[in-house]
Length: 273
Ligand code: SAM
Image (tube, rainbow, N blue to C red; front, side):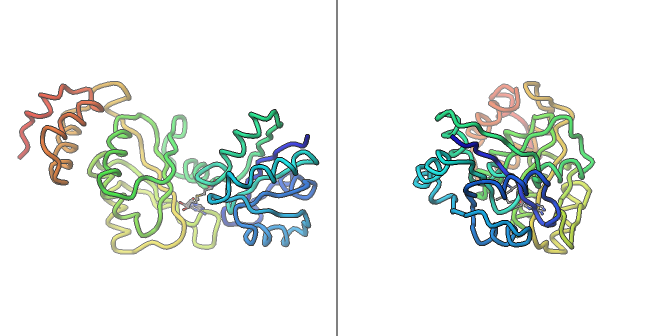
């Protein structure tokens, strides 16, 4: 039985691939790639002729047997279009199934936009939470942010350029005007790490609509560590936000009581100007 190697690939700059990743790609019996056309460009650049097969969101279950047939004969390398497979990219099901079948799984360290953005942001990196892509719908986004609000951990999210301003504004409403960083086009020609508060960044990108790939990093809670009570300003802001979205006061009070440590009645009775 071969080994399943998880192989990170560049998120922009083609030189961001390790010598070990190149050797594993060269020596594997098969490369399972999210998009074979994208991976073929990388392989061509490094003169690697290993056979490719597709493994993506829509065939990730039906493709399993073909990949395990290849593993029975030798090593398989799993790659996604960019960065680390399994991080907001296909890979999780294959890795789980490989482990269930007793296949050795070897993860290679390498590029991931989340980690590059975090360490470049200058925000605390000793405790962080990667949340992938936040929900698109306003109500679901607000609920997700409310859940994140009390966490004393730097938050990292992937975001699309056309949703960035809406997400920054929603985050500002729920989390307050925290420090944040928009990491755009990391490792590419137009790389930008713009630092400020959520308000600053929303203003800037409203006036200068962003392009390219974006990772958003937001400072964690400083006043209300997980499990402790939110301060009154935070509860007021969250209540006002929910009411403005059309939620009833009783539903908003019930939801906020679950995350804020406040009693439902006290939230309900808060006087909002
Ligand atoms: N697996 C990848 C990784 O480890 O970084 C992430 C894949 S996810 C489908 C793609 C998202 O990652 C993009 O929409 C963007 O939010 C973020 N991203 C990818 N490349 C980036 C870059 N060069 N700069 C900033 N963010 C990037």
